[in-house]
Length: 194
Image (tube, rainbow, N blue to C red):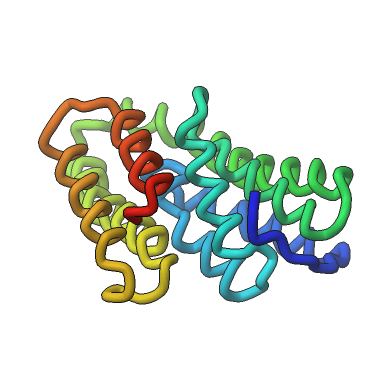
């Protein structure tokens, strides 16, 4: 990973990281990826615990790797720990972020999903589900904006924005597997077009 920075974390910083990921867990209606913009604000902008490059690399690697896409959270925790200076801190970062993001949503989902299924025909339950759809879409769009604007401003690097919009259209309008889109983006990046 590039863009490593050196930070010092006290015990209250680790608790702050854990508490923040627990809160994000309860917001992750569209999956953990939908809270990426808030993770960016917290880790990169507010505390400076991750560089922009580390943030983007964490998401790109986890999305390209097989397995659950929540692994980007573990990579972010790993990078925060490595920036703090040791491999043991990196493992602490992985445990802090993963337990924080998984524990509340798992308990909530287990309890509420059963109730929601039993009462799925109630008007308030249907209204809640329909009302959450635009929120999830907005969270995903904000994630796209954060990742695409990492090259500096909306008009600074137009090829990256063109690739972002093209990728969105391909994913939306075709059944092409996401890995092909990621591979095309990686190839264009390696060739220096974006």
